[in-house]
Amino acid sequence: MLPTLETSIVDAKRPIAAFVRTDRHWRFDWHHHAQVEIVQIRAGTGTRLVGDDTGTFAPGQTVILGQWLPHAWASPAGESAEREAIVVQLTHDAIDQLSQLAGGGLDGLVKSARRGVLFERTSAVIDAALDEIVAAETTLTRLAPMARLLATLQERLASGTPRASDRFATSARPPSPDPRIRRIVARLEAAGPDAFDGQSAAATCGLSHEAFCRAFKRATGTTFVAWQQQMRVRSAMRLLRETDKAVTAVASASGFDNLSHFNRLFKRYTGRTPRQYRGEPSSA
Image 1 (spheres, rainbow, N blue to C red):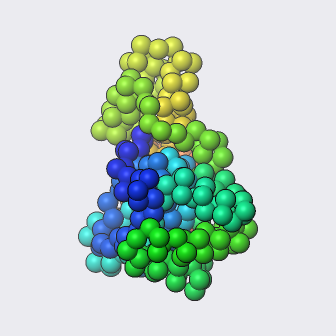
Image 2 (cartoon, rainbow, N blue to C red; image 1 turned 30 degrees about the vertical axis):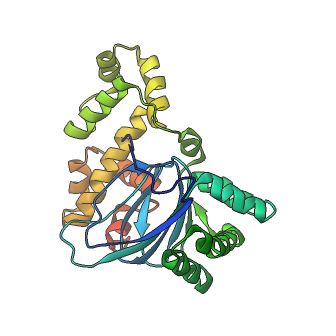
């Protein structure tokens, strides 16, 4: 999917902003933006998508996301449990300046954020810094806790795990999609991943297959086949969360003819087997 461009809440006059996101249902919103973002989950669970990585969010997790890295947080509709997260956004200039003040000590964190970094466990220092940033009313009063937060994440970088693949991260860029690819993607989103195969999509665009593959990768950051696979896996994730269908039925409903192939791709994109994702014992 092509990410939507989120309107920035930070700029040169307000380089750091923070808010608390609270809701029972987090609607899927695949987006990106020019600012660096730090998200800490305080309550609730759901699905986390960062670049070409899919996983589950849970309380205590903290994620730092670099510029233009597409991401989304989603939860099933109808669940009564409330979800809460602290979201901090800052301009790339602000993080560069803080890094310079730290003598370049944040360079590793800044570089790693291009792929998105997940810290599974929080700490009292991280929690307190985030609370201070949210409570602060001016950029000046946010600087000290922001510097502490970034320094702590830098110190704990070895315990963090990159999310998006390096290949995906290096393709993340400001939006400049080809309108022909937009039309193909819109059709896929409306009709499903099997609306086109590569040859028919290329013909619809008036391109050779090779030229279409290059244009699609340039516009989306991934291949046409990988895009279709991710759509099918995300459909399977929704069915596993929201229905009690057997895994074989979920695979078939999501467009997979071969269960082994489904299991392999599902684990590649989510890090877990379908049964693990649903919460069943893996031997079930």
